[in-house]
Image (cartoon, rainbow, N blue to C red; front, side):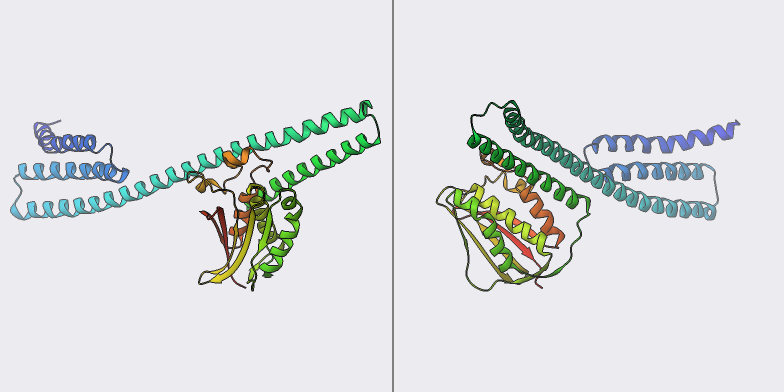
Length: 334
């Protein structure tokens, strides 16, 4: 390296090193700021360091006024271009970082929900299976005294089998919804007919709990949807309302239309849901503290209802109202 080359290196370093030190200080001060700010500073410091080194070296080379102006023009244009690119890159990386954080948050929420579901399903499977095993062993060992006891054990086995069947059906339906494998055949569906069938389906459970289920009089709207899936939505909502309404309480069903389409509301008398639990009511396997002490399902009914409603391009929500909760389903009018 010649003496002139060494001189050029020293001059460039004398101009660019201070810029790099200033950039390092700026990054230290901005370490808690956004990714966009940090990336922009990094690229900006690199550009300014190059600009400073070129300008300092050009001035030391005793260029003519014209040549120096050309060099400065080139440096300014390149610096502005680099700065714009730095800001664009910073914003892009910032958005990607936000998306990645949101995706990670959703992934963790799904994993937590999956673990909760596995825990609840394991618990709900273990109880009836233990009962079935005990009753089958009693029948096999012949420890029962007479036909009446044998018939009672048969009735209990059938009841536990039906409970397991409902749980498996719920899991299958939920898996279809989450996998996007749900095939809907849309048609004109009367909410009045759906509610009438659903009320008849929950009537035995309501009578056993001394709960009255009332459907509001008047005209019921017709919606665009699939009859089996929408019927399951209404049955799940009514079954949930009956399960959590105390004895001698009333569950009311009403429907109508407004500017947003058709709506169907189920009002129970459960006493209300804690505000902290309201956002999680439709989560898979969530049953809340009050529901855990009752004879309920695996906490899949409301999650299935939300999935089926959203598959119809509708919406479902819940709020505390009156003596309990009010679930509202919104669907497109046929």
